[in-house]
Image (cartoon, rainbow, N blue to C red):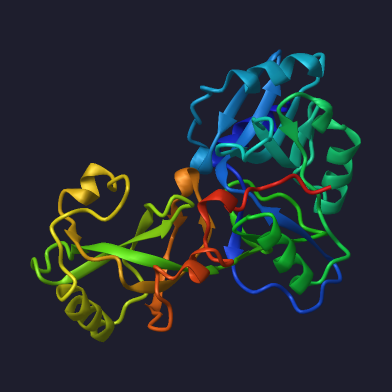
Length: 320
């Protein structure tokens, strides 16, 4: 690669700004936002160097990534993408999901348009390499259709990219706009944690679970945001009446949470929003929405309905 871009790689990837998707889709493309470790991947001389945000090296403890460089037959390139988390059921692991190209065989492409870069990336057919994936870029779907597509594939959001935009290493730009999609679910309250520094009797977070097919309450995480001061007091008052000594979860939460937990009888249902479901079935960035007094968690009709079910967690699937 040229000295010019090699020296600038330490700035790290370009970043999207949070916002709303443009009303008019002309001049924009859309990508599904993948969960994982964001990294620039520089393939050179049969090896690969990974740089994350701020130019920080990413630990290359992934042998498949280094193996990907060998079939490139000496071609040098810098890609922007994500190292995904654990693969979904029935999928081969993907080691790198590339959605942009910054340099090819010494030619700096950062000043070129997103449209040209994506066309060049597609022409390289990198997804034929084991462990490499090039997700689609959409130009013919509405924002509503994209949101539905993101929900169907279990990703946490959408990124809109201006077709004419250059690549700005290490910078945030309104040429890339990120929209996070919140999902909602109902979950059973199995306990709570006191607020740190707020006294033993003040509610800090609520411990959540769902029932599996064997009617065991399985821990899915804790929610600490979204409460008002009034709702914290109200929920705490209700939970005080449901106190019990034994943990209601089939497998207790991690030691750091169960050590200070106050257990309750699992008779209350909470409604929460969340971004995605991570490894081990834990909710990512959950937010409190309120209590559901119209649902009995032990009602077999509710347990078998389309709620958050452990045997049907959404996985990110490849979109063609």
